[in-house]
Length: 81
Length: 81
Picture 1 (cartoon, rainbow over the protein chains, first blue to last red):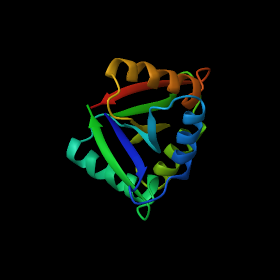
Picture 2: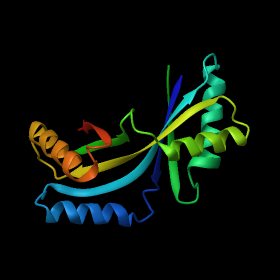
Picture 3: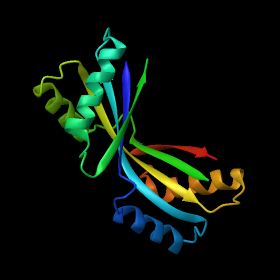
Picture 4: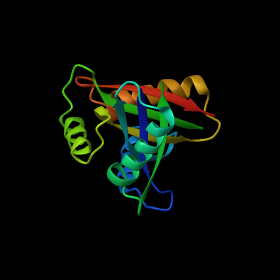
């Protein structure tokens, strides 16, 4: 079973990296790009035979405690069979 | 219109960051985690009124030329209305 965790800066937090990418793309001629926000994602491979509900709890704990900084970031968890 | 671009290391490329996260999670007691691979993702906000087919072409060019290193990375593009 695989879990996908996406970690992004909260919408209210300034993303200077995304601003820089937006400016670079506009300078390169991609005028249609209005904004970019960058995030991280993690493909977590779980051992076989894990209960899906327990797996979701575990991955959410991992995301909250290890992968994301809950002060400035938010995350989503998708479980894939 | 928004485009999501996911950039990951190719499966054949070693991901030391993912290895480190896997080891850290196992040390923290998450024994069910068999492996982690980390990637980047980008939410690209496109100007309104862009033709979807042209938008996909443009975002794929952006991903190939700017966001990903095609020697070691691969990318996927999802367009969202």
